[in-house]
Structure formats: C-alpha cells, structure tokens
Image (cartoon, rainbow, N blue to C red):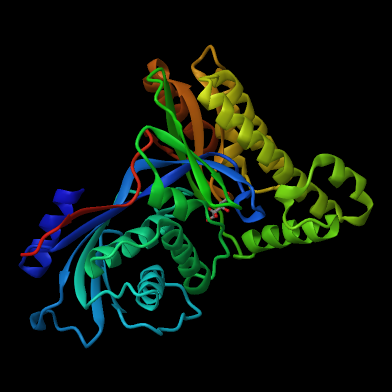
Length: 393
Ligand code: GLA
C-alpha cells in the first residue's frame, strides 16, 4: 500500500512525497450502538488501511492560495479542498467533506496544514460498516500532525475527527470508530469505556482463533434518518428513566418504567442495556480465552440488533444463520452483524484451522441463498494511525 501510494504520487506529481501517513478501518467485535449511550464497545483495528502520501504544493501544481489537491484510488478522482481555518460545512456530503472537515478543525486547533498535493489509497471497503470514513478522517488528522510537526493529544484527536463527521458529514456518530482507528494496537482488541474515553487494550493473540469478516455486499437504501432516529430514541428513553445516559440504566429500571415508554423506546433501550453487559462480559471472556462464551454473546448481540434495535437485514441474518448452522464443531464460535447496520459486514469468531473451509462455505451458501457474492477476509488486530515516514527532502 505504501509502495503503491509512493509510485502513484511520483506518477501524478513528478516528485517524491514528503509525508506518508495511514489509519486503519475497524471491525467491532461486540458493543453496537452503545458508544453514544456512554457505554462500552469492543472493536479492533483491521489490517486494511487508508494511506496518504503528500508533499508541499508547488507553483506547477496549479493550486490557489490555501488549497490542497487529493487524488483518491476510490473512483480515481481528484478533489480540491482548503487548508484555511473557518471553512464552513456544506449541505451536501461529497467524499471531500470528510477531508475538508478534518483539515478545517485541525487548522482551528493549531495544527494547520500548508497547501499540499496528495495521493490517497485505501483497501478498507467503502460503506461496508468497517469505518472507511473514520480511517479517512484519522489519516487526514495524522497528516496535519506530520505537516505541523506536532502531536495532538490522542483523545482530542479522536474527538476532533468525530466532530468533523458530525459537522461536515452530518452523521451524529459516536466515538468508537475514531478511537480504534487512531489508537488500535496489533494483537489487541480495545474495550473502550465511551464515558471516560479510557481504552483498555485486551490481548487477542491465541493463534487457534481468527476473526473472519464477511462483507454481505449489500447496502440498503436508507433515508439517512435511521441512525439519528435510534440515537434520539435512546436519549428519550434515558430522559424518561431519569438517567444521564442508558449506560446508567438497568433492566430492572427499564421494566419498572415500561408504562412511561413507547414500545419502540423500550426495545431500543433494552438492546443498549443488554448489549453493554454483553460487551463487558465478552471482553472478560476474551481475556480468559473462553471463545465459546464470547461466541454465544456475539449471537445474542445479533439477535438483539435484529429484534430490538432493528438494524440488521435479511442478508446479514442469513450470514449469521449460516454461521450458527456450522456451530462450534464446524469451526464457528459465534457471529454477528458489525457496524452501523442495514448492510455491510458480519464478523465471525472462528477456529483458525477451519478458516479455509469456512471461507468456501460462506461464499457458496451465501450466494446460493441471496444471489450475491460476498467478500470474505481474515484480519488479525492491526495497528492504529501512524506517520509512516516524514522526510526533510
Ligand atoms: C457507526 C458509528 C459508531 C457506532 C456504530 C454502531 O459506525 O460511527 O459511532 O455508533 O455505528 O455501533
């Protein structure tokens, strides 16, 4: 990827890049839609990254004052953005909005980028629920660190990237994706307390188990209101229960207040309250190498997302049913949908010695049932954002 970014940079701009930075996508092992409820999430960075190679702009690049130009491997397009502070968000959200938002907020936070030209190459599947957008924001913020020669406080950097997504992409996301893309560590998943923003790195090193990621290759047409609506229902439920966030509620409290909640508020809150418990339990099971327990919690998480949070779809349900049909004897400990929902990927915890058979099984059976070819890969926990190189040449 790095070599590819350099050669594309040289081809486009006729010189070597000065800065090379990268940030990974992520897979969430468990803990879905809990982050904006001040709860717990348990993601890991994947070994798929967005790499940016960049150099200061030169007059021959034809850019205006304060402009930067980025070529992306996604669609092989070039976008122009501003590195000046104070650039306002637009109503529409082109791919450059994520870059513009991050550059603007970095400039305002004292990490200005000088005008630059860049190449961006990514093997994080786009729109597949693996946080391609966080990989983009975090790689741009890392580029601003490289250019300004200063290191941002890690928590501030994550919050800045989240703010870019809120304000420039109009997506009221939680904090999980930016945290794991920024702070992921090889061989570790991250148990993140989204209230204190303190991550606990949990070793995930047993060579006998693997994380299999199955992209359903479906993205259902959404109105854009599904995520904000769920977030709002959780906030309303918390208010009715008299707690700061659903993280502070228990099932007893929820059941005691059932009459005051709509049916929708009740089931949304039930997902969050039970998912928080499952996430903490799954991290403990991971520490104990108790893969059977962790797998059971993943199936329970999927059922809760399907029935209570209502964010799965038939294709993802099919993948999880196929996983369950194999069972532990067939090499699968557990599986669930991962990410925001309504399409994207399933994540499965599997036996390493069954990986090849399982890849063939999911590919064949999923296509037979849905007519769609999935994209399947294995990933160990990868590292977070990095300045790969920074030359003075
Ligand atoms: C998206 C958001 C995250 C999180 C997940 C659901 O990925 O960006 O903040 O809410 O959905 O767990």
